[in-house]
Length: 428
Image (tube, rainbow, N blue to C red; front, side, top):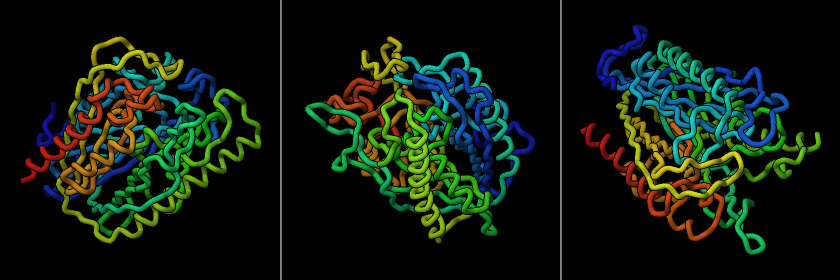
């Protein structure tokens, strides 16, 4: 693996005084031109309501390079091949790259399903589309890297009451619904990047919600996440790129959805209401992110970046096919991938599944850094990742978890805390 202190392979790589931040960002359209065979759930896409984007952020402190990529897709499986390609072609180390999906359910998936994972498998059309997205990831990071400029960053938080716990007990059984009494993290995290002259570069937003407002319309859409990013980017007249990352969304739905059972064709009126709800809820989160970004008063150019990743083989909990499109390969263990990008005292912790609220709450409590964000569906999506106590109930997040009880929660919390502690020791 290429060391972050070695000369990068790309001759266009920026060089600067160590400890000074440089940032570059690119937004690229990844809307498929042919929708055939790309719906990750039963059914077909009938058209495109709004485009899908890839948003790539490149950061360096002069010694360490990292890349953060957000994709308007339902999920990205094991994307190790493209991370290895980025290292070969650009010199950014594989374990310094975090690629995540916004989890819009009205978009395709990419990459292979990891052995033992519970995820939506794709067909030949999906794998062909995967290669297209891989090419655009590499091209976007190459452009973001070559255009990187001196920058400063700051962090802030707000709240948005758009998400709601979805594990509801009705008529003697657990179902997907709305549970206002259930745990729900409503924090809107914002990392703001701007030039030394104050020109906007990028906003990284983190919020815990499924983008399933328009699930069932049959049309390609970035859903709630896409609406929030459009609002933010439009508020800056297109001069900023907004990267959406999903927090602990494993037990969180949007408050308002299309309200039509999946597989039942909605009327045009129902679709119109769903898209209105999508824009409204995206605006609420986007407007709060904008308010937070405008209120970040302390931004710094002096930045030390740390990064690392770790994979934990966890025993498989077999026999829990959640739906027809999720088939679990019979293996002994499934890889839980953990990732960390640290910017001074801010930790971005990536986990390769849909983490529930209570695990994140424990992570926040035990993390050495108060500003610890959790990014679900990072570098893979192996399934839902519930806390141990939740296994007492047959809820959706437990049924969709590929890992046996007693392993995922500790592996996530202890693993992320270990990665953060390792970077803190290295910075001394």
